[in-house]
Amino acid sequence: MAEPVARTERLLLRGWDEADLPAFLQATNTPTVMRWLGGVMDSAAQAALLERVMTCQARNGFCFWIVERIADGAMLGFCGLKRADAPGSSVSGEMEVGWRLREDAWGQGYAREAATAALDLGFGRFGADRIVALTVPGNAASQRLMQRLGMQRRTDLDYQDCRFGPDLNPTIVHLISASQWEANS
Image (cartoon, rainbow, N blue to C red; front, side, top):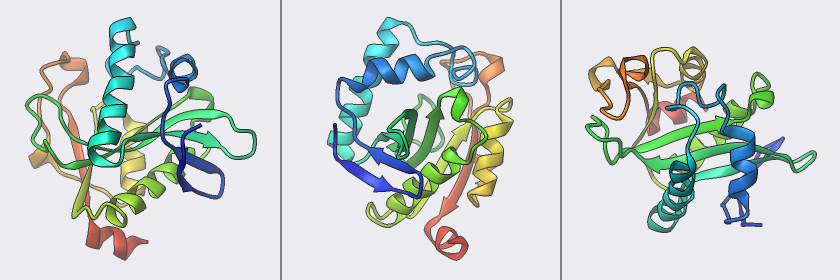
């Protein structure tokens, strides 16, 4: 198992190893979880996911880390940081916080707990000046979490993602600065 990156009251965030991919996909590559993320991933997208995560980790020192529940070691999904890189993005290169948890972990505060740890790392260890979070209009749950984290909606940064149709556009951008995070923490 990869080294822990952060520990919260209930969660462990850690790096990936290749053995994590099948369990992660079984837990999160479902129609419900992937509803606002472009749909269930085919085999090519699944293979590309691990490559993207490992490359992000090697290049930046951070990635979307595996989230495990400490009480039983269950893999809940991922949460962490990456550089925004969607085609046509208004925030390309910005540090982005993101999460994807299995459905039975929703509504229990795990995403907020993991995202708080990721934001702490982003502003602390990795020295970000600001961090963005991205979603789509229909994903009200993610928008509410972004607001609870103290992030502000930035309609001036919303953009069209050419990889998706109208049901997944525009991409909605939320942002928080280091000084806002410090004031809220």
